[in-house]
Length: 335
Ligand SMILES: O=C(O)CCC(=O)C(=O)O
Ligand SMILES: [Fe+2]
Figure: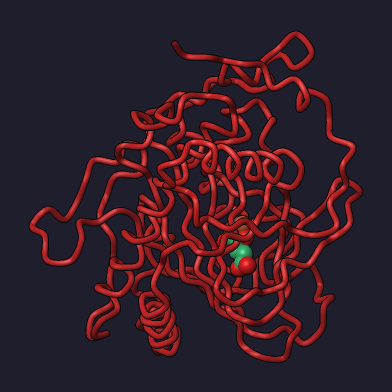
């Protein structure tokens, strides 16, 4: 029988003001022992309720896949600006391609983000005949640079490996919400994941005139799996409005929840505000993968997250419509 326990301890705003970001070891994610999966899900639940961010270690993504993607990203960003702007994301109806410096503005209070990026969505793994998939609101193919050997293959290999990692986490998120482990299976059959490679040039001082690496924002999807290099830039806002550094830790990814999960869980899981400022004096690279649920899933509040003290907070929209409207706003603010 399915149980839908109320998560009563989270229906009130938490009084826990985090000062650091927990590190969660995924070693037992697929353990045959339920008690070990349950214990891991409890750690994840605390992090999701109190912080909205955690590091993951023992995630299973081989280092050589990360290195190949990073090196391809650097090769791409080293291309002449004319080659990159041919693939400008503003030309794409489905938000694929190149974002130039200040080409995006995640915080409407700001003037633009001091990073350049390149975005891809789902595409069949290397060598497969099937190049596209119907992704509803975001349907359409990727764009690729000519003459950049290995770029497409490396990014797609990374994409599929990290999407698989993301899919493997849903049973744990389900347990964390006191739901059956299979709860999200039929909502993540065609996950709408966007992979982005990012380059942050160093900014001369922390305070430019309303321009930083990426302005304060929440992410739009279920969660983001972020690889970052060793350059400190990412910061996460706690409940007192204090910025907490997400210090790079070798061998980990940073996982943060996004708005889809906040809506789905009626804010039991937190989609936490974050930003990046690269005042290190050197170049910084990061690789977020935004893991969205299937586009047509309705973000209706999960029963275990609704109670008389915590009534539904959000209008119900589909996952795809929600992400698309947020992307439109973010790229329009930079026009
Ligand atoms: O580069 C980072 O550390 C953060 C990137 C980010 O927050 C985003 O792309 O949404
Ligand atoms: Fe973000």
